Image (cartoon, rainbow, N blue to C red; front, side, top):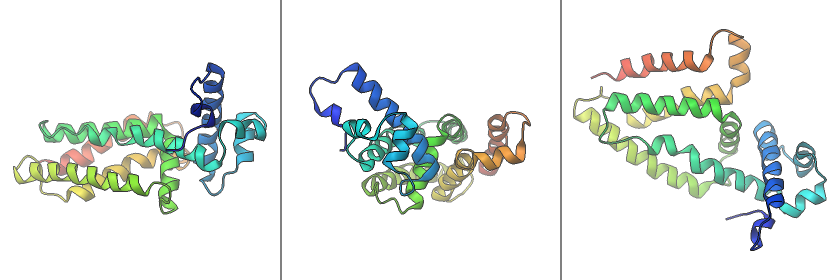
Length: 207
């Protein structure tokens, strides 16, 4: 796994850790705005307010920085899906999953756009992780299908249900500028979205 240069030493100082976080925060902003291909070390150094040689002391390449961000993202990004409980009440589990995904869109919009940019480029740097994602989705799809067979949910294609939840929740992060431009200051867009998505999914999935 790629890691910052300072992490390779046995004793990593507080200042080194702070500098790494400063660089990663700047890189997240740059990558989420420009994508991997459109981002440069110079842009990240400027956003981090440090010289390029100083940045390169902590991270040798743009790829290393991006890899650290992706690893962090994937450690938390799939937690909402992992949390679906096969022993839970089906409609309640679906509702909770939708809410968790919407909260991720609200709280981690740059991370959502970072992931979206990577996927739009063909996911060249996360091929192994995509295999893990396929396994996880299959596991949860089988749970949802089992609920449908048991008459606890309406009959549905579990894979496309999961895709639909991704599309409708991550939209509020990936297309935030568009959403805000259209809605303006009208209410709390995430609370309004949560109520609407409850209606959309729960009404459609009632047995």
